[in-house]
Image (cartoon, rainbow, N blue to C red):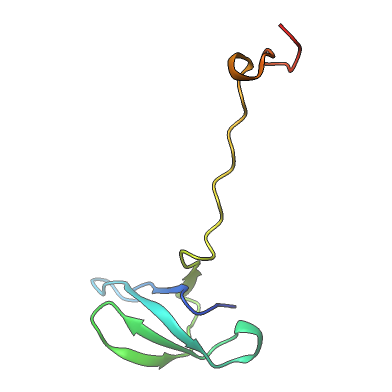
Length: 86
């Protein structure tokens, strides 16, 4: 598990009726993005976490992948859908 500051830690509830917990990673104390992480949870609680198998790292907004550009249609480029001139 590797994380960067600004990523989100999502810990799934591990018992029936236990809600998931989500928080922002404020500090990374391990080498190369490894745990432990200092996490500020949505309820305002801040704690040092060693996430288990019920946790996932979600990229922060700065690291989120950009959306893929859509293919241009022939109308705007002067070419048809197969790339040939009209």
